[in-house]
Image (cartoon, rainbow, N blue to C red; front, side, top):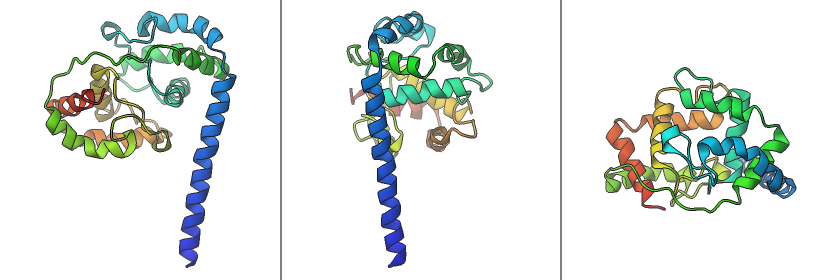
Length: 215
């Protein structure tokens, strides 16, 4: 009985943390200045495109349509060295100094401006067996959602509509210890064993091909 009470109490406390985090995120979004973010985004546009559409030639992913909480977490991670400091992570090393030019208000403002971009799904570039990928994706759905829509409470970002070539690169980065290597990267460490289950390039392409069907 006491154990049941403690479990219920722990669950309520966890829900309170999630709700408080969501309220704080909403308050931050309301306070952000998209006009100021537009000015700061001019540097980002050189790689990510004027509408956050991404640029495969430069290795810069699509930003439009991604959840604000995830964009903030990644910019904070680059600033803190949680991303962009692993050997071989060339693109991360290019991104880190860009993130470091933004203070917390600047990050919020840029993300607010990105939120004004049209949410047009990226064009598929990866070929794979979507049926096989659907089976493999069942595990991913627990954090990323059944439609790859993202689940903030689980820390899983939206995958649907994102650049498929970028998804492939990130899965390989997890496998090659270029993401999830930092001691404080809790979400990265959760993701590494999931990526490790994809035992070949074909398996990666299959799951990304399935994600492309969820556009």
